Image 1 (cartoon, rainbow, N blue to C red):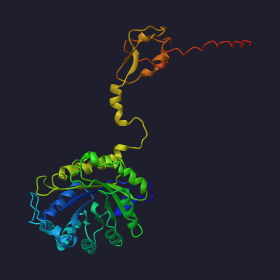
Image 2: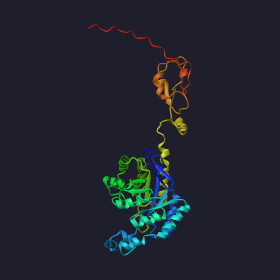
Image 3: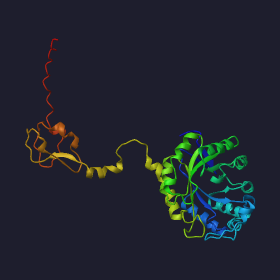
Image 4: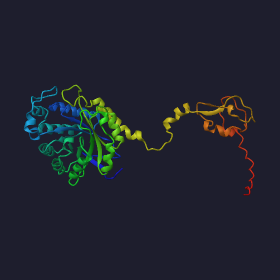
Length: 368
């Protein structure tokens, strides 16, 4: 484990030897309802995740007037224009304060993605323990530097980026704040398995040996997150909902509580399943191997003094004594010291020792 690859979020240490840090991305799946947001936080806590995360936007400052006022007429719309839609999904600063207090009360870490300077400042005033950045801000070095100055842990998604974009972002942040985690991410909602490019995790680990690397996983299952852990990801972010059929673009590919519980459970099992790498028999294997294993036994009744031939010996279960089958070649041709009944174990003590062979005389080398 690299000594420098370490990050602490709200008292939880994350490093190569640690458990995986799991973030339930609520995003805007609360649909603008504080009570629904609380229900999501409660459910995430029950699933065993480490943190819940929302998305904070100051919409009028974030979007151009034209983009804010453009018609937004589709099945997922919460308003006539895109701006109205986004405003309908936004929780107020006081809502954030109440939700943070609720999270503290039940014992789960709460923070958010800051999409703009105003939102970042509001979250800083709230005292969130970490900041997340969406993939769309990997080139937004002014925002990254602004938040880096807060001195809180930062988590950066890298969807849609080249390695040079990641380098630029890291170079902007690290002089101000070394508490940084980089997430491999495919900015598609959902992302197809073939588009995840999980081997980038190894690329990022090699390029940034002092930084914790993770995965923002937009694929709609849990197996790829486990693969990411095996590749060295120690932070996993998964979208979270209470209803796949709810209105909104994220719900369909978000994990519901059952899926999130399974993800957390399986990630917690991985270190134990990996073991220490030493191949050895385990105590738990003794009974099955005894039942399935084989031993050497007499294939028929054999008299004392009999010289064993291969056909005199059978290979049978269970392996509850006697010689293992790999000894067969070594006992053929040896004489029995006692009588053996059919299926009786063949033991070394039942056999005369191997007689030493006469040494072969050395021949003189032929003269040239």
